[in-house]
Amino acid sequence: MQELILYSHIPPTRHAQVLQILAGITASRPTPTLEQTLLYIQPPATLTGAAKKAQANRQTQVKPQKSTYVKLIRDVQNDGDKTPWTLRTEEVPQAGITNVISRTITERLLSDQDLEAFRQTTGNKTKYCNQFLASPGHRFIHNNLIIRISRILTVPDGTGALEPLDAPVPEVRECRVVDSSGAYLFEVTVRVEDGANSKLVEMGMGEILGFRRLVEGVVDLRVPERLALDSRIK
Image 1 (cartoon, rainbow, N blue to C red):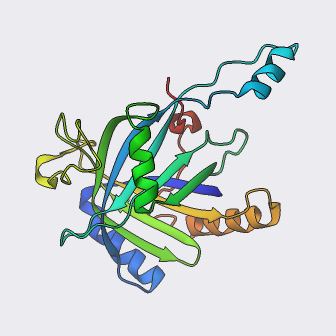
Image 2 (tube, rainbow, N blue to C red):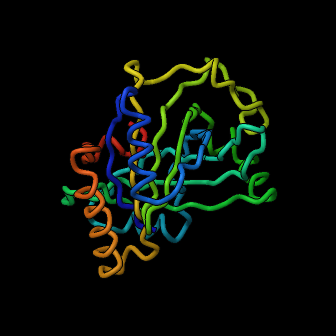
C-alpha cells in the first residue's frame, strides 16, 4: 500500500478553531481518539541457503541491511475499551517526490493467534524499545483523506519494560508532551491500495494536494525532510 502524507503543527490557541473549520469542511464531528503505539526493533531477514549463495556469487558488494522499526498500534477508548492491535511497517519515503511524503506501508490487524506468534518472537528476534501515546486526538474522514490531530506524549520510564503487550495502558496524566509548546501534530493522509498503479497514485496525489489548497491560510501543510521519517535503525 502506498501512503501520501502532509504534516503541520497547530498551536494550542488555534486547536478548537481548526477543529470547527474541519467539521465544516467534512460535514462531520471529529471522532475522539486515544492511540497507543509500541515500537519494536526488527532485525533484517536472514538469507536462506539459495539466496545466500546467489549473493555470494555476485560480483558487486551488497551493503548489509539495517534493522528497522515496526509498530503495534491500537486505539484505546476513554471507557477503557481497546481495539485489536495493528502491525504496521513503513518503508523509507521515496526520493525525488517533493510535494508530499510518499512511502510504502503494510498494515495488518492481528488476531489473538497472530498476537501470540508476535509475542513469541519478542526477545528472540524482535525487541521492544519504547512506546508513546497520541492524546488528546481527533480524526476526520474527508472523501479518501484521513485527518488526524493529536499531541504526542512520552510515557514514564520503564513503562511496559517487562511485557508491554500485557501492561496497563499508561495514564495520560502521567505522560509528558513531546512538544513543550503544547502544539498539536496535524497529519493528513491518503492511501493507495496498489502503489504500482500510476493512475491511482495520481488521483491520490490530486486529492491530497487539493486539500492543501482548500485549507491554505488555515493550516500550513508541508513536507518534512524525508529521511527524518526513515524507519531504519541508525
